[in-house]
Image 1 (cartoon, one colour):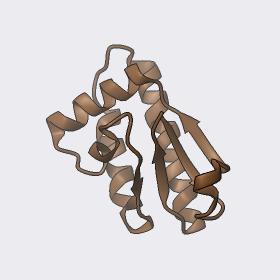
Image 2 (cartoon, helix red, strand yellow; image 1 turned 120 degrees about the horizontal axis):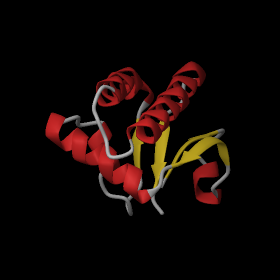
Image 3 (cartoon, helix red, strand yellow; image 1 turned 90 degrees about the vertical axis):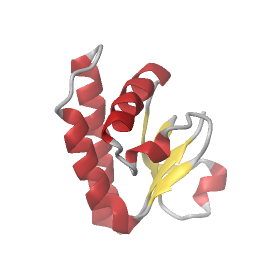
Image 4 (cartoon, rainbow, N blue to C red; image 1 turned 30 degrees about the vertical axis):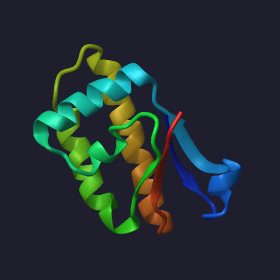
Length: 107
């Protein structure tokens, strides 16, 4: 799964990322399992590893707060998961600064 910002909406079809990061399936599973327990609706949009989703510009602040909540939890590989959560938040902050939405691209 890739989490991405695109320069233009038309770049989505071409897969031309402006910025992106890849999330492996095990880390994805750990984040989603915790998000389910906490009912974090924006994070749960990433629930289906094989389905695209997006977080709108207007939702980015709330999404980043959800990521902060998740960063305070314990995981099987806590250091790596927390690093990935920080990276996702950093990407969300960049999207917000650019006035763009964040896309979740399925594998």
